Image 1 (tube, rainbow, N blue to C red):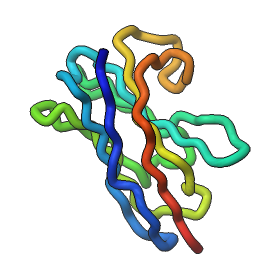
Image 2: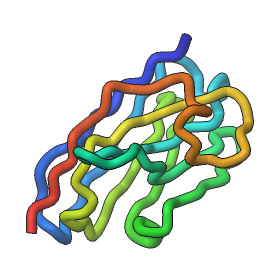
Image 3: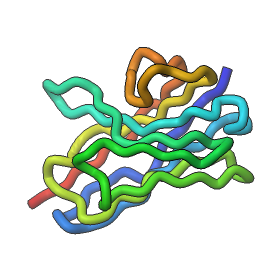
Image 4: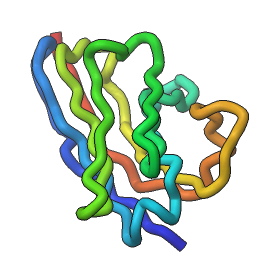
Length: 125
């Protein structure tokens, strides 16, 4: 069973940048559908970005398009989320999730059986 470990969260001013990392305990070829989700208090967990590690296809939620970039380093079993132009509304716990099977939508929370513990991002105005 794959294990995921996130890192890179922190506190930044609005307009700043952070890079989150998600390290998998085995090759990402085994769980090629990897996504970043986020959740803030009182809100549902939402998909932020997705990558298909075998082909490089990516998807983003509308609110982060043009600001966030998801990328991978297959040799390091790592998926990154580069976040630029951060806004206070990006404040949340960010989670990495992985699945082996295709799903009808990339941001369906229940489709992902493997989750990391999360890393906190705080953006102040």
